[in-house]
Length: 393
Ligand SMILES: Nc1nc2c(ncn2[C@@H]2O[C@H](COP(=O)(O)OP(=O)(O)OP(=O)(O)O)[C@@H](O)[C@H]2O)c(=O)[nH]1
Ligand SMILES: [Mg+2]
Image 1 (cartoon, rainbow, N blue to C red):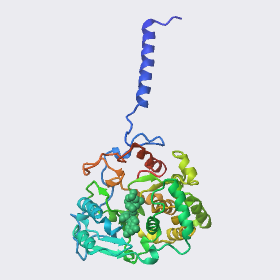
Image 2: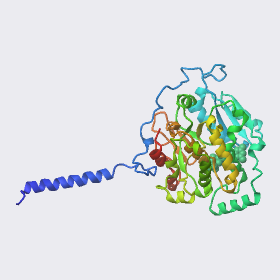
Image 3: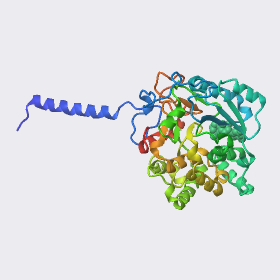
Image 4: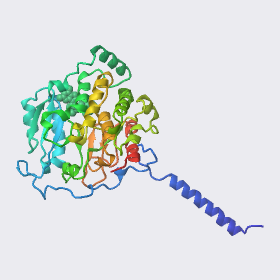
């Protein structure tokens, strides 16, 4: 039976319209600044970002004056390991943090160093803030290379890593710094009375005005760990970290949290070659130059025993295990994932990566732009993997 011409035309128009719609759907505007994987089509940082939900402590409703005996501050401190030579960069970090947050809350700073701080360092840093500043030497027994590390083997291993273009592989102080940040900082007597810390580094930037007490937020919401940026690591630096971690887990199965982040840790979809070289670890980690944490978690039996085990295994020296993957594995395995918080509202930059929220409270960065520099940097962003397996909370 012949089909009338107008019906044929209508049919053709419907097919064309359907094809057009399918084409449009496949061409939804993509985020151009970040490599989105796992089917994520839009960086959550492009969505308008406000403060976290719930009751927040504000400086105009509570007493946060610097010398108050009965201030609303909880037991928390801003901490940094820093060298005297980094004074100017430290001042620039403090300038940003003071103007965006701490001039309202006046939390104390504790500066750590393996060498005594100069008077100039002390005077100029104290002059940047009304809050109290404390200057602490790292105890020799926390910094020295442990006696079970073989110097010849360290040098030989460093040479192999250098041939693989691994930065700082032969710089012993870099290995000592990573080890200290992994498992020593929380043992310093100056931190004994504190529950929460916010780690800062010289030369980092803060872009957004934050108008609530971040430490009280951690406490009130039972948060163990807060981060801003998630990155892949150089797998050559942590070849045996996951195998050693698995041995530790096999010996201590009860340490594994029921709500752990195993899927995030072991993802092999996005960068299978990373997972392969790191023997089962995706290498995705919280970038620990920014972190806000619960010292009770790190001082606790599970994390500290884990660190002791890793320390004996030697990878802080024979490889170049960083504190970022070590903290991340510790948090990802022993903490409850619900108690880990993405501080999406804290605009942050440590060269070359950024966390830049879409908020009128921020200035000086482009929302959703996660790196500054060469385009290859974007593939190191592993937030999509974290958001997929753990979430955006
Ligand atoms: N006191 C002291 N601080 C150090 C030493 N090595 C590193 N640090 C500090 O430890 C932190 C991390 O060191 P960085 O050299 O920035 O390491 P990184 O962030 O992996 O490397 P970059 O990408 O070059 O910044 C910084 O706050 C440094 O100031 C050291 O030997 N002594
Ligand atoms: Mg740094």
